[in-house]
Length: 242
Image (cartoon, rainbow, N blue to C red; front, side, top):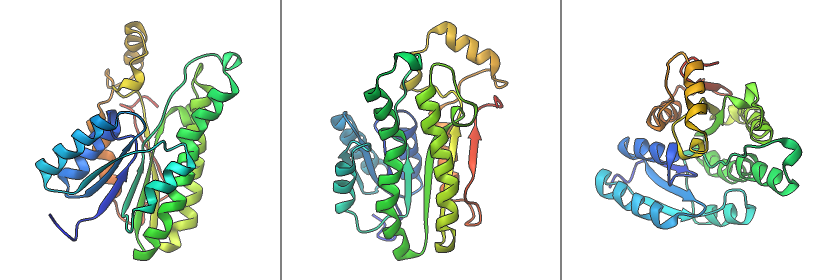
């Protein structure tokens, strides 16, 4: 174990982009705190694998990032943090006219309120060191908008504005805030799409394929290691789509 290793918190780390990001950060020598909302047994096994493979400390925590009390409890046991990756997110596909208020508020709780809860708690820890990196995992729909995904698009658009504004607020404290904006990535979140939908999307993407979680993970790690002068940026990874 390296007692001088940096610590990263990655939310929504039991699968997809979050899981790939955890692997990347572990390989780079970061100690990790990983969260998930439901599949804690899966996450604990994954955390143990990372510990054995990379000789880092890795803690798995079950927490609903859209619940203020859960986030408060999560941070109550933390005394330092170098990198925060806000990756937890959910999607909803359907007509806005058919969406319930509960579904709308749940999308915003997990995708956007969570950023407020985690950043508010992380900032004092980062101020202690006068350094830190906050990376929000966004989507191209946050800037382009998507039919049948109005709530998701709005929540990611809010995340982008949140990123730019908080970056300006924290720049004097040497804390950088950026977002990684993803195109269509081959994750479970997109498993609801039909083969025909996937084929249509691929035909629109210049790279002629979906992105891989590992590619997004590498960009997240690169953003965490980027020069301190880079802040307030929405960095797109979408195969040239937008």
